[in-house]
Length: 406
Image 1 (cartoon, helix red, strand yellow):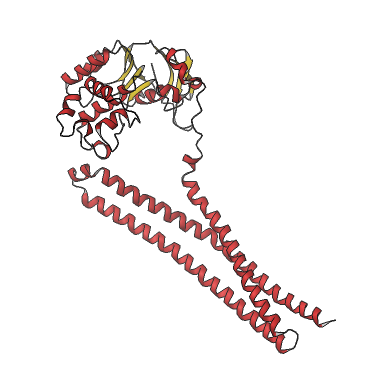
Image 2: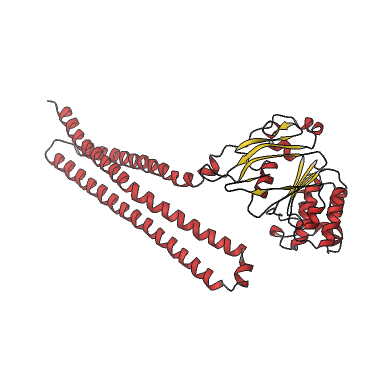
């Protein structure tokens, strides 16, 4: 056997040792993957709870102070911080354990390769130059294989974050409209509901069951019923926020599924119980940051919502900044601004969910009379007799053992 063949065989022995160590590293990495993933998942959950608690406390600080629960909220938050910190420590412990094992593994590998290579050199079976060349290539190979395995583990770890946003990221987008915007002016403002049923999840009971109703164009209808009967849910189905579980909603004789929610929402104005204002001026919020706002129409809508006089008494008028979530305004002013925002769209249909519950009776009556003159279809959810009396017809949503119906 030639000296070159012998050297190649000796290099092969060293290479087998390096490949074996690389395989052991892969096994070590995957053996620690499960515990490390579990620890990181717990850390993410703990951190999310801590942040949610902080945001909840900040947004509800008024209630916390009025109920004198500052110490309780502080204690709860501190416990959550400790839980998050401890979860982070567990992650760091596993990371340090892995780094220690990794250092020991490759340290032993270096010692073994150098010892074996030196032995072969002393025996004359390998030249010094070939040993140094092998060590150089070994370092590159080891670094690349470690990086490849680490990136594979990091890629699998991304699943932790993807799982937490899967309900949002994997939700099907709203379908595109099948009717052009130019065709909507021809649609009537009547609404028909056929055999409508709705549940929030497959395992949940029906909130609405076999609801049928007809609302003519230009008619004002008040929907009443006991609390928890599904009035707000019905309204959300009517405005296209929730798809019906069964049945259908027709607008102007066209199914809402065919009309498309984007087209439909351009036809309607809404004031929901949990609507929000945004940082900006009063004019911005009425026009909802329209790129080409009509100032005259903004003021006309404010007048119809009985808000104009309040605005002109403010130092900056319609340019007054209302702050984050409308905190500068009173509850009644916020409701009237939301109503003005709904009217700014020049809607064919107006949906109101307790839209005047914070107003005094005379002002509520004034707004009801003003809106009644618009001659548009109105669907109103209310408990106050004055608002119910402003409707042309009252629909009672009555309770059932498992659901509600008309």
